[in-house]
Length: 388
Image 1 (tube, rainbow, N blue to C red):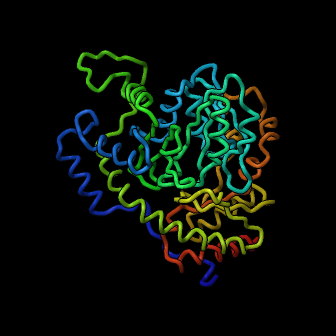
Image 2: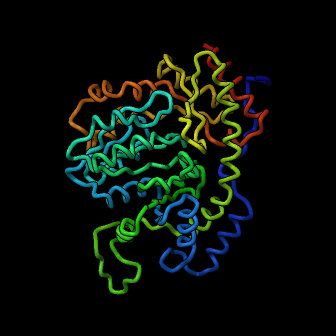
Image 3: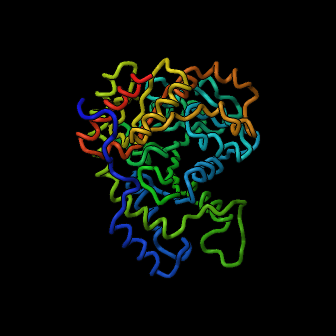
């Protein structure tokens, strides 16, 4: 480690864009049809995104939260059902189920990968469980072998929250090749973005068709007489966003290659900082896009962790506190919560409880920097942690 630890270098900006996005926006503008039912950009993006991820079908949506909600509804999630979610995740994972009237059941995660614990999932399954939602935290797959085996044994389908996992691979298989529904986000900070947007991958035509109806107010694409066949909402992506996402998709491979090169360098240096433990990778992850550069400082208090994050930001690092465990938020308990107290859930989820208090993450644009730039990060972290 070398360099001035007091200030971070200028990392690449995010989002990244260029003439490809400009050309795409003009193409969408000049086609004269700006919504998906009349234009060609959304259709083209869905085809390209599905092919890239090895899925038969993709459906673009307004955002990643709607992608989850739509996918869950197609799987039959609603009042009287339960969805098992990791306790350590962004709250959209649980809110998508709760807004459908279902109960979100938080379970613990692995303390090293931060992904949902299959043993905890198995213990939480009841006759009301309608879906299991693994979250591929920071682009690291949950244990899909164990979860697929559990799904097959119980008949409870998986829905992959792949909001962090664009381009990821598990034992040579892409997200869309794992046989289950998967939902993505294209929010401004994600690995590819149009400011907002989402997509759902489907392994079969039946699921895609059902989702298309519900994402377009229950109306089939050929309808001209307003025969709405199901309930639904307007989750349609617009043509401008789709045009940008087509350009963003073409950038993804090169960006992932850079992050995969830089993360082992950074993780090795962070591991040398006293008290710092970088996020681990299950070796069955063949390709990790590294949505976040995550690490823990076990034993630190939440108050001290938050002060460290503020100090890292002041020194120029795009640093953030780890997600708050979902059961530690007021929003989780507003509707669709289990009949337990916060303390009860916390006792079931000790790893989520700890990670929520001691985790720090850096924006993935840091991993698009040079080797020298990335090499400065651990110095800054070490100096910050050593400063009272």
